[in-house]
Each structure stands twice: as C-alpha cells, then as structure tokens.
Length: 142
Image 1 (cartoon, rainbow, N blue to C red):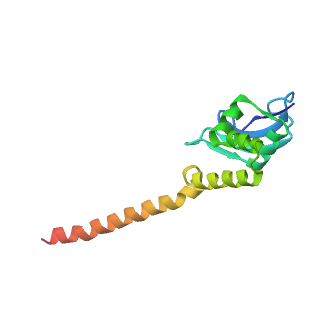
Image 2: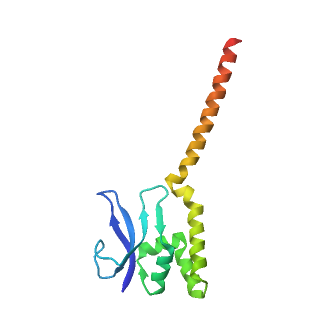
Image 3: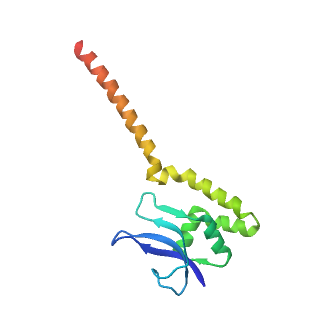
C-alpha cells in the first residue's frame, strides 16, 4: 500500500521534511516513489510547498496520507479539493485554484517575495530621515 508521508532531511537538530509517496513497508528515510512536496516547520510561518496535481493523482489512485501529512494537506486545502475531485470537478480547475492560492500566500511565506516590502520600509525610513534633516537646520537657525 502506498503512503504519502514525511521524509526527514536537514542537519542535526534542524529538521525539514520532504513529502513523499512511498511504500508503507519502506523505512522513514528509505526508498520512495516520488517527491510531491516540502515542509519546513522551523520558519515563521511554517513553509509548506506541494505539487497539487501529483498529490491529487496519488490520492485518486489509492495512496493514503499519514496522520501528519493529512494534517498538512488539510491545512493547505488539498484534502478538500480531493473531495471535490471525487464529486466530479475537473482536476485542471482544482489545480488552478491551488496555484492561485499559493500566489496569494507567497508574499507572506516567501522571504524572496517579501523583499520589496522591506525595500519600501527602508525608502520610507530614508524619507523620514531626510525630513528630519531638513527641519534640524531650520530650528538651529532660529
């Protein structure tokens, strides 16, 4: 029986996980069929990246998620989309919805996408500093 479960990667005391499809009898970090995602609990907020189409495919052919993986998939809405897939909605529409949701959440979770916001804050700080510098000579001249 196939399971969708977590495979530990990362350094000692710094775990991150790959979400993999593996045979249920295979060891935790052993042989697997396919990598379908990534999970890092150490970031704030935690990072969850999933290949939605592949997860829906594996669920549709009978792969069972582990408890921890089911919790993650429920959190990002994949299990709800799978229920809708079984009810008859087309997979393409569900995958497009998942991609739109990932793009919507990217500025919050992706540090690279958050950099423009940092640049905007720095620009605002520079403007405040310039205004303070312009006011300082005026007040000392009086």
